[in-house]
Image 1 (spheres, rainbow, N blue to C red):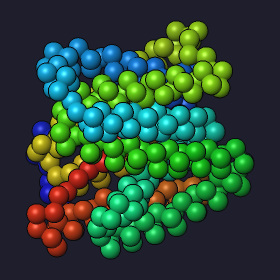
Image 2 (tube, one colour; image 1 turned 180 degrees about the vertical axis):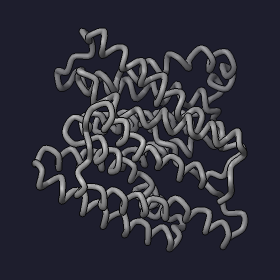
Image 3 (cartoon, rainbow, N blue to C red; image 1 turned 120 degrees about the vertical axis):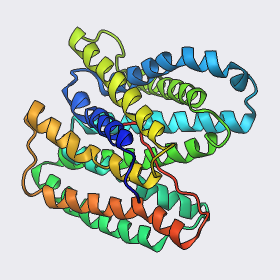
Image 4 (cartoon, one colour; image 1 turned 135 degrees about the vertical axis):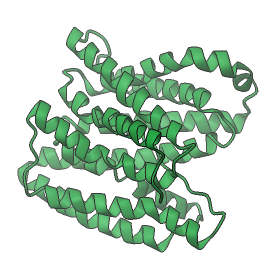
Length: 306
């Protein structure tokens, strides 16, 4: 852990604010959940495609089968992530949904362990703390309504799917540049969401002008600006610092939802959310602790696309 350069602090602040708008914007958009998720990915891919083709056409043409499988697998997982994360915001509060989906590092650690990789003891402690917080928060939401509890479960599933997406992404990014991977991944996610919409009979068109404005804001903010800036500062700032900063999305989204949507969290939900955040900080910083114990061990950050 170290203090980022001054320029990176400003960039991180903008990135956190950008991703923090994701939950409130989705909750405020009067459109089918799959339509919101489909268009944010389709438009995100369209925005990045000219640059990817201009700068990385030769790289795309030279892609091998394992690279394609990793990129396509990441896209399917990302599509499934959005298919669960987006509707969860209409079932429970923005604060609760964001807290549960932020549990993605927990599932990333479990996947890593299942693959035979080392997971630091500190990470397991963080996971236990997160479970305690999740039980506390979900218990409060269950008392409110079964719908709110179901929204919590959907958001938690979205966090697990985000971890699967990041696992594929980490493999693909070992040999692929960011722009080609993002275009393939976002395009695949859009196709996955389009198939789900067709299968469930959910409409992707006929949205109101107001809905389109919010979807475009979602694409420009959380989909492109927020995570692009997170990836930019990874060159000069510790991945652990970036991971912890991403967790600030939870209180940022809660504040925006309170001011804009009037979703003021009850006092009963605050302890559970704070416990989850504390556990996630322990998990996120466990990589730095391991690096100190094992010099040369890679330090990684999981940047989700919420």
